[in-house]
Length: 169
Image (tube, rainbow, N blue to C red; front, top):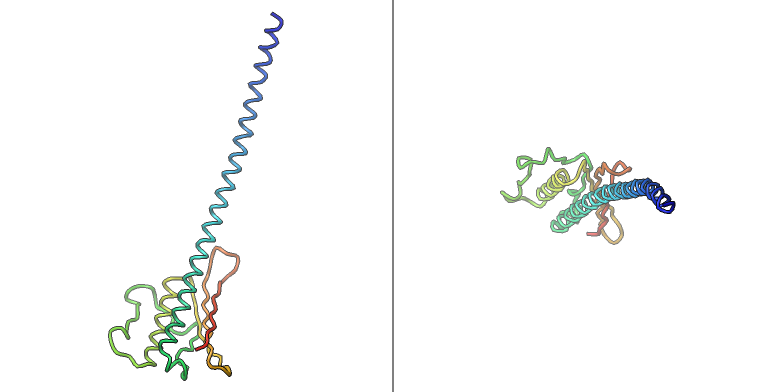
């Protein structure tokens, strides 16, 4: 009988240890789940920034393609020079969409203005708080266009992100 009494006391004592082990395991699992949630949040933020940066690169390259397509004006005039405050889109609705050269014939200089208005409209509709400018650098080998686009990535520590394209005509 003595042996069975010891065994009974031992079993009761071990049940309390099992409960503590389960609580520790739950705590470890909950810390892991919280870590995964934080990782998922950071992943979404980085994906959003990558998307915005891709859109900015597409918009800048589109503008350079427009400049190359209107080569006569781009090679000699200053029609494609624009500051951040010029040709700002009024909004991002179908009523704000400029289609003056799509519905009527335009001269080359009018096409340059139309290109700039379209570029600013794309920025307003696809990027948050976007601004853009185009400058020309005359070099010995020809004209170099410098297209700068800035947009606000509110999830990052930096106030504005910037994409710059330098291309010779």
